[in-house]
Amino acid sequence: MLEFLKQPWPWYVAGPLVGLTVPILLILGNKSFGISSSLRHICASCMPANIPFFKYDWKKEAWNLFFVFGIFLGGAIAINLLSNPNPIEVNPKLVAELTGYGITNYNNLVPEDIMNWQSLFTVKGFLLMVVGGFLVGFGTRYAGGCTSGHAIMGLSNLQLPSLIATICFMIGGFIMANLILPLILSL
Amino acid sequence: MQQNTGAEKDLQLGALDAMCVNESTLEHKWYHNLKYLVIGILFGIVFIKSEVVSWFRIQEMFRLQSFHMYGIIGSAVLTGMISVFLIKKFNIKTIYGEPIKIAPKTFNKGQIYGGLLFGFGWAITGACPGPLFAQIGTGATIIAVTLLSAISGTWVYGYLREKLPH
Image (cartoon, each protein chain N blue to C red):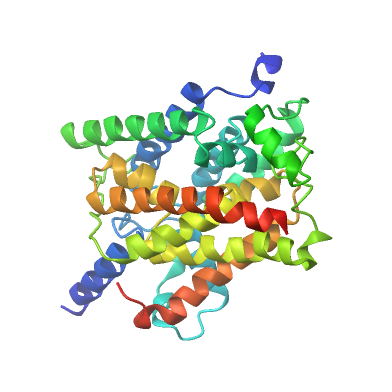
């Protein structure tokens, strides 16, 4: 059983499990699935700076912070107890492309060749980690949600704005991955 | 009356921000939140084991080199849709007996501009906000920098919000 769990899980197992989060959160306490809101609650609790957007009772949303802390713990548990010893298997075309940028380490979920403490202080590392992270936080809040809040929760509830947001997430991702990211990785 | 206005304001904020406004009106002790911790842990394990939080899987997705991520998001949405349909059809209540309400989302241009910007960030970091937490859990401490940067991005959005087109 444990050996079975240690293998990478296929999409048709993982997808429905992710989708089940929607009814579970609703039934447990009328909570709408959404993760990027946690970043707003962190701002509201640590640095509201009198900005109206951060002046609300974040303690009422504390469940969301428990939830993301759980995701952090889940990551630690999975990697220590259920870890797949083999490197991740990716499409040979991607391997060929990434080899050209000097990315050859597939042992971790994060590409260690380009995302590490040393590279943080290079232009490439700064763009990948600091600018990339900033875009994630700024963009999700501007859009009013991320993959969980819009793509999964919003689409589950047949919301047109969420469909528009999801399409824009994908367009942005395609432009970045195919046209801009290759330039950054070549730095 | 004042309470009403407050609730309305909350709802508008929620519409813009996908904030949970449908939340339970019941007051609970803090430890009731532990159930969300447990769901988070299970969710984090699924994230890791399905490799959703892998930078490489996200690169494959945006290059149309693998079906994996499309399969996960597609089947997750389908599962969610069926669940929400059943909840509405059978008026399923929460475990505390409250009726389940889901706030509708209203369109604003932020979903386009913000959506594109998040798409850029998603392809660069290979992570949306949830996976950032899971990646740090796996021991990739450097991702704490990415997370802090995402938090500051959210803060800057809040700061500039009135000046941005919505």
